[in-house]
Image (cartoon, rainbow, N blue to C red; front, side, top):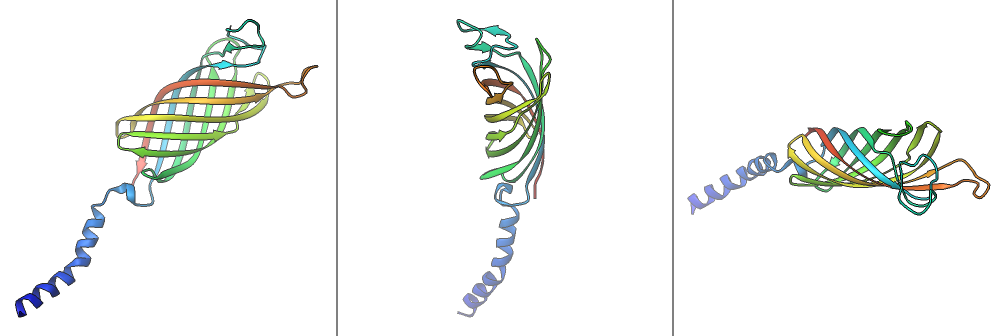
Length: 195
């Protein structure tokens, strides 16, 4: 009986140490304090709806209908914080530049939310794209994408992006809106800091 009492006492004293040890070996996804600095490099193309200007290729019956946008490159940098196994979020800054036709540049600050599961991740973002050249204007943007991490800090990513840009007024419309739907693919370079 005395041996049983000694055993129970020693177990009770060791349980906090076991709990601390188990906690220290728990997956980092369950801990707070994670943040990720990353950069992206995409190449994309898209479809422009209802825009008779700066068309790369008219796909519909007239210039005011469907057309292909200029191919473009999109470079970005961001920081995310939170728990990626549940939801990490943060600020993304992107710059897009046309690779053909009239030179256009767009700066797009965005809010992003990301969920990671194993070597895969899914994310969504919303932002305000600002056209820097040749004519200044702005719009609204929403994107959704996925990432496959080939290695810890290197991923292959693809994203579908929807934009609505506001243009100069015409006789018919005071403030015309030009919807654009784009698809882009590229690299995701990540530097994670774990707690």
